[in-house]
Amino acid sequence: MSDSAPRVSVVTVTYNSAAVIEPCLASLRGVEEVIVVDNASRDDTLARARQTRPDVHVIASDTNLGFGVANNRGAAAARGDYVLFLNPDAVLADGALTALTTTAASFPEAVLLGPRIENRDGRPIVSHDADLLTRRRMGAAREAYPATLPDGPCCSGFLSGAALFARRSALPKPAFDERLFLYFEDDDLCLRLWRAGMPMVYVPEAVVRHLGGAASRPSPGLLWRKHWHMAWSRLYFERKHVGFAAAHALAFGRLAKFGAKALLYLVSANSTKCWRDAARFVGTLAFVLGVSAR
Image 1 (cartoon, one colour):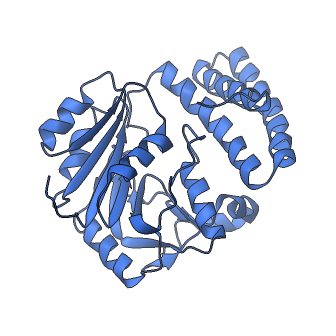
Image 2 (cartoon, helix red, strand yellow):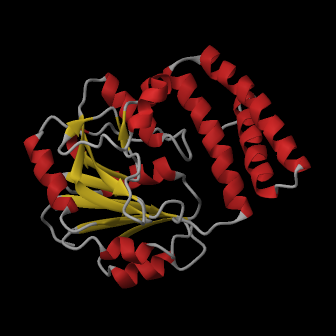
Image 3 (cartoon, one colour):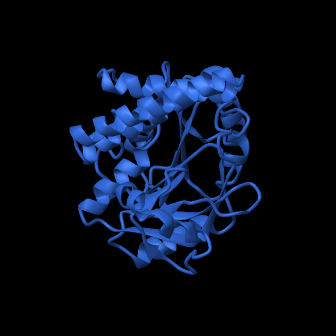
């Protein structure tokens, strides 16, 4: 590793990500510092990472720390002026990093910058938006997306955590709320920055291809944990930013909704959707009962 500080550090968090880590790291040509924070993978993720990128800096955990904690560890180890938090199932297109660093230089007050994120077919994914509380109130106005994608950089209230380019010196420390184990970490960080008057900029010239949902091997256990945490984290976000009463009102409505849907899918023998909504119900109930996500 060079003694001089790199311009950009890339941090990616892995968990049984062997199927996707190689193209991710291979796309990071020209990046001087690449940090992989591994959440106790049981496959050959790290072997493939080291083979693809021999100079990779690996931070290996014996337990699954969760997305936010792992990213915070990577950011703490990073030495670059900028940190790109990148999902392991994401690939940088040619010129993406140049577009991000050039735009960051043009907007020195911006703390976060976000690229245009596309799915594997090249279609845009919603990767910039109003903050979560605002877009919840927008209703039909959001249906115009993505027909109204901007042609150039623009300020935004939300940028997707699948690929976040951050000015390291301006990031809160820690950047991500470590009480969130999985999901809504990006919504939380963006809302905190937005409320503090710290600008975030969407950069459509920078393109990242995101495979989506492919960062870990699918399994019934993973599906359960995914929807459990999605339910729990959404309510934690509501309590943190709106208040106890609002969070619990939302929770009780969701208990009825997810419980009814799980029973309906059980009766109709749709096991996958029954499993999904049962996980959402249990995650919601855990929040109401004060169970921590960690």
